[in-house]
Length: 296
Ligand code: NDP
Image (cartoon, rainbow, N blue to C red; front, side):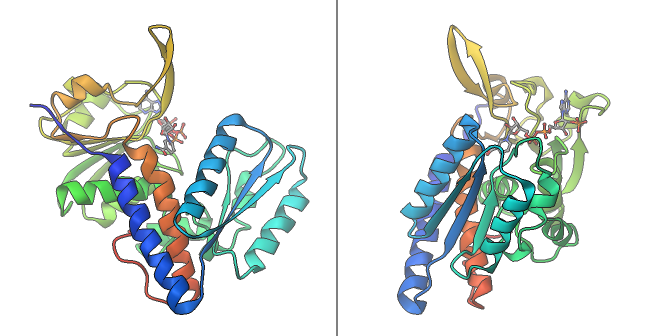
């Protein structure tokens, strides 16, 4: 068997098109343009690349992008004051603080200072609680994108066995909540899980969010299972730096029914879902109908 490739790049382009069309209608009919503020503290090169890419895609779908680049030595008080200003600014519908923050800043304190209605990353404790109790929340972008791809590929997820490898607050835990919300039977595996290959072999859906290059191999995969590879790992191979996922692509693709590649799978979905969340936040803030198919 050779797995169907789930093309995240094409899927993400479709989401951006939907967002752009909805934004154009909002602006034309209501004179409202969604705005996303991105706050970057310090000069981490990977974060700079992400922030540039977010800003560019925000503008491309017709939204306003506000970038706030702060010095690495910025005090917590100054950062919190900026967040308070963005919370109060009616032109800003989404606020994202790029992580990781420099060590002297308390990331939990900073994230929890964002107005939950503008928390487009879905990391605020209120949104975590809303998602956990099945209420309308802002949902973290990477798990949301993974869920969209699963729904698109499988239709109903009800009753399927899902194994999520990884229990981070950013990916693993919200992914498990979303799958539970879609009535999967969910197992969350982590570094202490006993006989991980046997646990994974039970799954109709495998979501790997570990950060270990090519850890999941084809002999762990149940024939026909759907594999969502969240991992992004840079490794040296044949003298070149290459990106690989947490799944060994060739051996998993030989057994799975469908699989997301790395790059070009979950990665592009994350920013597309950030734009979708910003649009959703803007519609909610203005009491307007939310876009269909762009939320959990
Ligand atoms: P974290 O490091 O926060 O979490 C990793 C999780 O994997 C932990 O729960 C850890 O378990 C578990 N783990 C580590 N080693 C093993 C092992 N040997 N067996 C089983 N479980 C293990 O990572 P993130 O969740 O932030 O990210 C995971 C991956 O996803 C990374 O490669 C990251 O780059 C990528 N990523 C991709 C995104 C995208 O846009 N596509 C966005 C965000 C992340 P324990 O809790 O026991 O330590």
